[in-house]
Image (cartoon, rainbow, N blue to C red):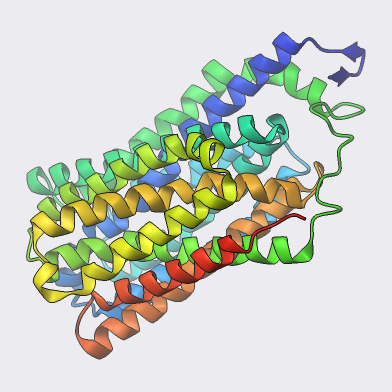
Length: 407
């Protein structure tokens, strides 16, 4: 690895890589945890503001629309500026908006502050995945690094749903906003105080002159267009299914399975916890089965587990719980594989812009199905209709994964 004065040691490069993974994981936990709070308190919002399923879908669509628009911009910034500092800036937006949400007194304030929140949330995914793909270009290690970072974010998600169930039972539905706003603020203080000084010299060495970590490689120039299109399609599909589970399952558990909101958060936290395990094992599964076969198995099992959620006589907790757990495992396991494969589509220097574009594509699926799912649920007066759509989408993703090939 080259620097302005020659070669930096492999030990320094490993320190830098570990710092990157640590910081990305910390901010991933904050970002994913805060993304879970709105779905976690949604039953209270529906009751307090007399919202329909269409209103719920529209709110999520507005939030995701901002992220679809801003993530390519965040990715472009990651190609020009210090990625770790950009992650801290995004966390700053998130923390401030959450602290203000604690004092929101009307639905208009709630709506606008969630839009402001989505600005900060737009920073994380394109910036971190671009950075991780830069510092871990070898495919197996790259997938494992993304698995670790992804699992940490998912762990934050799990803690968010679990803590929301506790907080709303003891305090009020607004309290989770305060708690996670303070956690986010603390993470921003930890970054410059404990990590930024480690990063600074190594980052300058990495970016000076010829960029380190195999900048000479220009992967992506010979990748078939069909491969790229299939990766994009699977990202859209995964985003659509993921956001549907995240956005509507708490309401499904309260309105259809007739669980209390706090209990619904506890149950759904197990879906996320299973996802943590799935994301953690994603690299191992892909290594054992191969990326293509791993995706095929995961999408097929996901489709098979999702459709029964729509069936009336199966909508009881002893049946729903294992279906949700297996769905979470397979759904979360797809992400690291897809994002690792996607790294082969672009060159080193354009990874930030590419991952911004890729994340926008992924969130487009979630944005579209949030709106469609809400409308369909109102049309048939049944929120569980979204799982039929998810099962079909996962089946289509299985078919697309079957045709993945770089030959």
